[in-house]
Amino acid sequence: MSRFLNSALDALTPYTPGEQPQGGTFIKLNTNESPYPPSDGVLNILGRAEAEKLNLYSDPTLNPVTTSLAKRFGVESKNVYAGNGSDEVLAIAMYAFGEKGFSFPDITYGFYSVIADFFRIGCTRPKLKDDFTIDISYYMKNDRAVIIANPNAPTGIFLPLSEIEKILSANPDHVVIVDEAYVEFGGESAASLVSKYENLLVVGTFSKAWNLAGARLGYAVGSSELISDLNRLRCSFHPYNINRLTLLAGQKAVEEEQYYIECRKKIIFTRTRVQAELESLGFTCTPSMANFIFARPPMGDAERIYKALYDKKVLVRYFAGGRTKEYLRISVGSDEQMDKFLDALKSIL
Ligand code: PMP
Image 1 (cartoon, rainbow, N blue to C red):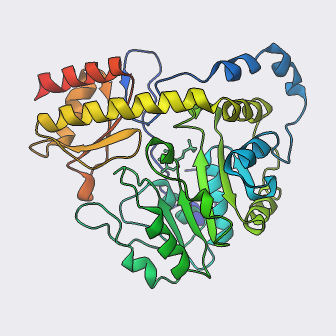
Image 2 (image 1 turned 60 degrees about the horizontal axis):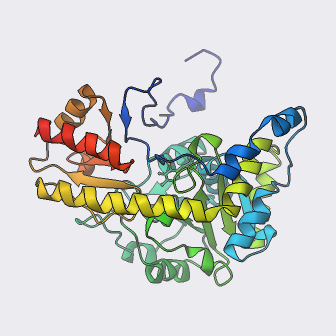
């Protein structure tokens, strides 16, 4: 830390992202990326002709990606926002709507508390039930904004939209952010409820179910007032927040969703197969609706297994401490990757 850093920032603890080893020797199942490449149209559009236009700024109105997402969700462009990854969208939204603080579960995506610290937003962390499901009763008498990852991370458990609606109805004066980073792997999007609840902001990403983690593209769908608030902040901070190539890639991807639907089907199929294999080895798995499996080894010795897998060049995610310490989060890769993972695992067990 330099002596020049704002002293109020001394205490920040940055988020620890999953390791990104360079070079191709690892089976990488630690950051929930898709094992499949982007669709042909995306690959083709990212050619020389578009790269030559990089001397020009990108569109500060976030077109064309907002218009294609609006069409996909059956809303208008004024209901769609886009950001440099959904982490950026979440940060702007928490800053925008967090004056009274935020509530989110004790076990959820780790970045929420990092953002809250960054912007000095107070947080309450209602506990998940013993089975890792969300206890919505807390949110019925809540006094601040809410974020729910749905499906939740790292459990993969999906909260039915009827429960999300109860949270929305009980909090008419607070924004409820539903972070749907993994919703395409078996959940149901709350975006259909946007016209009914002015306090709903649905956040999504192209990093998981659209095979574009490296492009850094996230979005939000909500009432035109909420979206206009987000744009007000963005244009006070970083008006050209998304590069030209990523805006185009996102538009193309939405046009070619059928390809991504097939990729998602494969991932769901692989998830079901690998989860059954893990259970036959004595693992306990949560009912994941995401592109990862959250699994407790038979002896609860997740850390040992994590390290032993690492030595065998298989990278999964381990969250030390608390109630997650006996679990591994394993991203669902291709069948070939998962077979290698299972072989390594069996040799360790
Ligand atoms: N929300 C959740 C629940 C996540 O797991 C992630 C990815 N780690 C994100 C948001 C952020 O994804 P990105 O910034 O790549 O869009």
